[in-house]
Length: 335
Image 1 (spheres, helix red, strand yellow):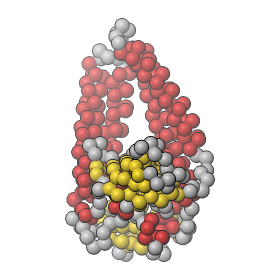
Image 2: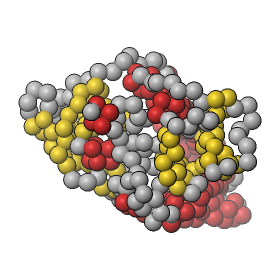
Image 3: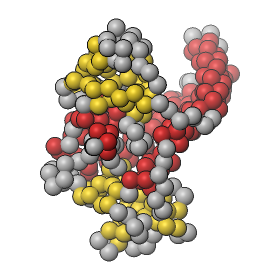
Image 4: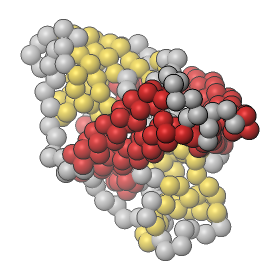
């Protein structure tokens, strides 16, 4: 009974993937968003090349635009052409459940699963590796796969052999505290990456302020202000990352029943859920989920259960998740 109550949303077995909650609308929205980002970044790169050849804006400005927007264009182009668009075309077919994983092996972040005479190789961050080692199942559709409770498909590859140096993927139950610690450390790595980008942006801004030919242009002080803001952001992000790497204590889960409609996808591709719940003190309040983790709102809407870390309070934001799953995000309670 307990397992059924905390089970995260999963693809309906034998039913086309398009029937999975929010999957198709999410992919449609991301295709539009990523396409827009690809086009915008590409136009900025073209502008940077034009400015470089014109010679009127110095070297730093076009170098800034080209250096930053080229990776952005490549990233969104890759995600769009290799991820979202091909996955959307497959949603008329059902996901296939692969369970047991007795012969699965692991090498660092790479997990190799024997499937149909070949090896299905996937790369997983630490929280998802811990979930897979504990639950021993995933869902596969073509080269894409999902873990239970996770609604965002990830890419895998079929190979003739597992990753070199792989060892057996042993069953390892994961405690809520361990899962939360792994999730926080993953977020910390993202903060450090963002801090590095901010530091590079600060260096480019200083270069722009020094290199710009027209010393009376408003771009010079703007570049100086941007450099200062980027430096402050770098310091803040590094401090936050260091704090988040500390181990988390075992959390206390508070389970709440939620009455809501289906989860929805907004214009920026965020999955949201709005409903009502009753707090432990008997007070009925509204609740809204939607943030950094796209899977949280979908799980709440699909299961009618909300799991909060600690004791929820009216008018406050709390951290929520799905026990046993690498799903964590904020929820906001009304008054």
